[in-house]
Structure formats: structure tokens, C-alpha cells
Amino acid sequence: MSNKSVVVLDYGFGNVRSAERALAHAGAQVEITRDYDKAMAADGLLVPGVGAFAACMEGLRAARGDWIVGRRLSGGRPVMGICVGMQILFGRGIEHGIEAEGLDEWPGAVEPLRAPVVPHMGWNTVKAPGDSQLFAGLDEGERYYFVHSYAVRTWELEVTNPHVPAPKVTWSTHGEPFVAAVENGPLWATQFHPEKSGDAGARLLRNWLDTL
Image 1 (cartoon, rainbow, N blue to C red):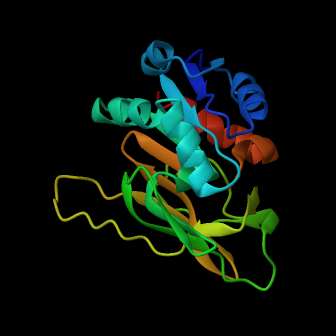
Image 2 (cartoon, rainbow, N blue to C red; image 1 turned 180 degrees about the vertical axis):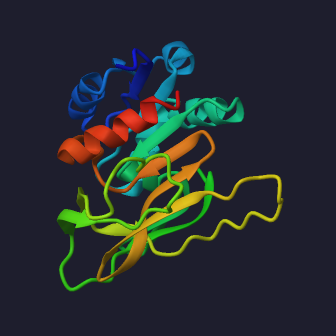
């Protein structure tokens, strides 16, 4: 059991209770709050997210969540985003032709999925890098639970400094390939819901907790 402290950021857009239960089951000491000091002091910060990109960003800014995420990352403190909580880490989101600014931790756009059936709702496999820490110990055929209509279709961040490790990007496919997860130093994220992904999701959360 990890005994690491995790704050689930409560900014009004996310399944905070299911995330709390899953993290507690994985061994973390979990608190749901938007309190700045508690969010900064925790070993890990989890940023959930459901709904529209622009609305999530508005709620995040109102709760000073953008400041909390930025301050934690500037100090190398772990942050994990889930679903729209991953999407808002990118530069911008485009929904119904309207563009909204994201946190811009990674360049790129969240755009509508081009697939015969949208939303992408249900279980799907992913293709993770062989040296992934997030998916360590998980079989390639494991399935994870997705619910989304928008995604990042191209990875735009280029690392030119040979002393800086390149991010580990995991992909999935629904109509077309899209980014399913990212591991980038202290910042990790998943498009799918690990808290709804059964034993595989629980193992994935434990893998994150082990890095805190």
C-alpha cells in the first residue's frame, strides 16, 4: 500500500467521488478539495474532468486550479489529468467551431473525433511504449474505459535537447488514432477513466502512486 497523499482537485467538473474511491483502494490517502495549500502540499494532484473543454477551463481558473497545476509542475511535483482533465493540459480545445485556450503544458489541439460512431464510449485497447511506467505490468491486450467525443489526434511536442527525456505517448484508435495517455516528467495523463477500468485501471493508479 502506498500511503501517499493525493488531492483530487474539486473545481466542479469531474467524477471526484469515483476518483477518490479508486485512489483510496489503490492505497492513497485522498482528499477532495480546492484548497491551495493542501493541493500544493500533497504528494500527488489528480485533475479530473468531464463536460465541455471551455467550461472545464472556466471552472479550473475560478478555483485557481491553473495556478496550482502550474506551480506544482514548476517545482517538479506530480500531477495527473483524467479525461477532460487531460485535454485541458493541451494548448487549445475546439468544440462546435469554438476555440478555447487550455493550460498549454503541451502544444496541440483537442478536436472532434472523426469516427463512424461518436461518442467513443466503452472499452478499448491502447498501444503504450515498451518503457512506460504508467502501464508497467499490464498486458498489451488490456482494455480501458473511454467516454469522449474529442481527442488529440497528433502529438506536436518535439524534444530537441538530448539531455531531456522525450515524453512517452500512448495511443488508441477509434475511427482514427488519438492520444490515450502521456507520461512527461511529473505530468501524466489519460484520456480514458482508470477509475472505471477495473483491475487494469487500479494497477495503473498504483503505478502512478509508486512514483510519488
